[in-house]
Image (cartoon, rainbow, N blue to C red):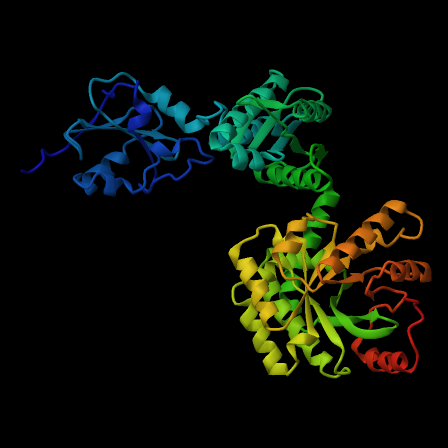
Length: 549
């Protein structure tokens, strides 16, 4: 049986607002679904999964499109009557709210719904704070109002510190309660001249106006940081979640919403980088650092192609003789000179470039090792990003076959960060490398997330003691106790021990006394250029290393 044709009419809405949210859909001007309504303004239950026309295929597209054009922001809705899709529906009421269309499926007699719809479109339903859409409108308006006066406006971006662990461990319901409590705590610090917003997730903003800016905003930011140092009680559990804040001021730091947001975002990034739980005001130097990082990032993408990378080799000593070298990646920028690995490797990992760079380093190191005495090994570092790349073991095996280097002469160094997740894939990768005959070394042991279970779960051949414990080894009893414990533990587990950062004969003598197997550091040699290796090997064969072991 054919459904009754839907009729179009402009007039008052006729749906009841009590269960409005259950019958509400939002679409953009092209009739596409709104996924998050600019900052999660609506709960998932009211987000349409399809376009307007897929929801209501029985409508006359041309007639409805023409009628939509007649809508304006006056509040006068478009009424479409008739049965639409379900037996209980009696038509649609459609409002234009800014650049959105709010569509209500009507199910009975109605009162005016516009105020409710406007609130839903501009507020976060979880915390009750205005959302990103309202924030953008308010910030634009306030900047226009202050543009022709001597008034100053301050903008604060707030991020909750350690919110994700709460969400992950206590559940999303607890996370929602925490966000509600955080919103109340923010509001409690504000004056009548301040406005708070929730943008998305655990991101909040505050616009502060009135006399005394920017000092007033800085005091408010410190009050907010102090307020978040107190614990939250969620389901009877005390939860500690701080906040980091970035502050920008108009017109000093910008005169448009985009400029102010960028400035406060940079200040927030700096606050988090300096240790979180603090407020930072924007400084132009922050922008300079950002531009330098972006320049470095763009340059990094070309570094491999333009052959700006090179490898240095630091000798490894055992029993008074050289047993191999560790390959160390270096970057010489044509304008900036030598770039420290600590500056560019995290950037390469974040941008997904480490697998390609790591493959190049491995091939270079293996080729170089073929020129050394046959009993010398070569140690190559694997970054976390590289280790977790699929096909790693095949690539390493193919490189060894291509170069002709025996697998037992290759030692791969990984850090504990690689092992944070004891996944089956991690274990399989290490076991496969072990079966191939490749040595595995656990680098920087004791400085990150040390867990003795790593030593039981994964097949290591060597543990490397970080130079942090070696620097004051001759005088610090705690460092001595830790190093002695690591050496004994490794030997009991049939593993060798390498000490990094050995610089004095006293350190070498102490390490020899507790049975440390290998030494690496300036006492043995600084990292060497490729051209210097042959001469070093010749001299090492002629006389034993000065370091006493």
